[in-house]
Image 1 (cartoon, rainbow, N blue to C red):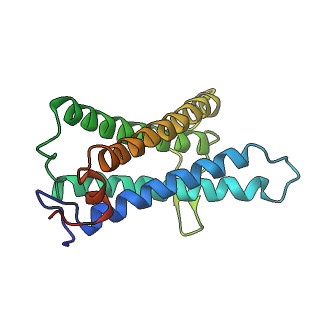
Image 2 (image 1 turned 45 degrees about the horizontal axis):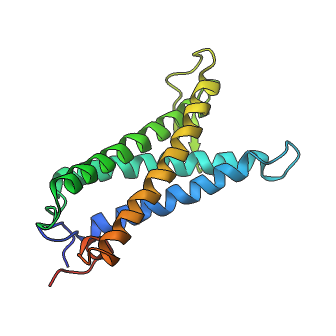
Length: 184
C-alpha cells in the first residue's frame, strides 16, 4: 500500500488521519462531558479545559492538513456497485462532518478567547485571541459547540453504521478500504 490514495484504495496517510481524527473526536467528546461535571474545587477543574483546548487546537491543524491532503491525494473513486443515492449521501455526509468539525473547532476557539486571553497549546506556543470581547461570545459559542459535538457524534455513528452495512450486508470493500486492505 502506498502513502497516497489511488483510484481504488486509501493510502497510509489518509487512513492514519481518518482514524486519528475519529479517536480524537470521541476522546474530546468524553473529556468535554466529564469537564462539565467538575466542581470549582476539583483538582481537574482548570487542568482539563486546558488539555481540551490544546488538543482541540492541534485537531484544527490536523483538519487543515486533512483538507489539503484531499487535494494533493484525492480519495478513491466510489465503488461501481454503489447507486447514485449512496454516492450522493456519502459525499453529503463527509461534507457535513467536515463542516461540523470546523464549526466545532471554531466555536471552541471563540469560547477559549472570549476574555481576550490567548490559547496556550501545552505551553509550546500560543494562539492569539483575535475575536475577543464580542458580548456574550462564550455563552453563544458554548451552546453551538455543545450541539455541534452531539451532531458530530450522531453523524459519525451513522457513518460507522453505514460502513458496517456495506461490509456485512452489501459485502463490498467500502470498510476494508478505510482499514487499509487492498481490493482483490
